[in-house]
Length: 180
Image 1 (cartoon, rainbow, N blue to C red):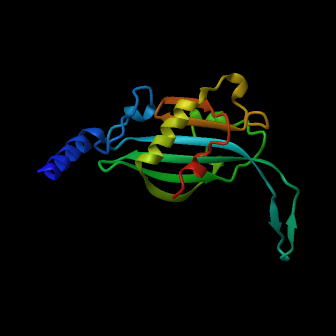
Image 2 (image 1 turned 90 degrees about the vertical axis):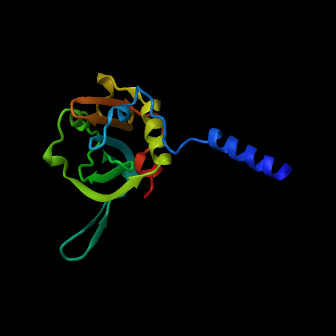
Image 3 (image 1 turned 90 degrees about the horizontal axis):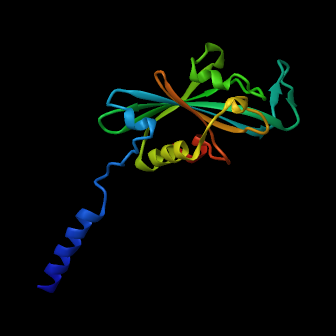
């Protein structure tokens, strides 16, 4: 009898103590506005130090010195009945300072040459990461728009004409945090 009561109590608290699998999205988040079939775009530009290698037509490989490049990535989140699906793109445009990144909040331009890299579904942990970045970032001001060696990490969240441009302090990069 004692075991039956213990099992009943465990089931009772398990049902009330755990979430039903659906994450509560704050009203201040742009993700909160999404309905099934809608999409939202995340652009992130961050600065990385890298060495550039070139191969000539004769097969010779030339290696440059290490320098800083801006890396711009795009995540298109689609809300489906099952959850969220992401298409991930990267751009070959890697100039530093990157003066054009803030223009993506107005309209994406063809010269960014975004190339689709992969497609995957988001789980609850990934969604929490996106919400945390949106919460952690501070709104960019006019002096923040250029991506340079002092301003190395920004996120633009855009849905139709609504957008947020956020400065992210630290090395919080979506592609490093959400690995698929």
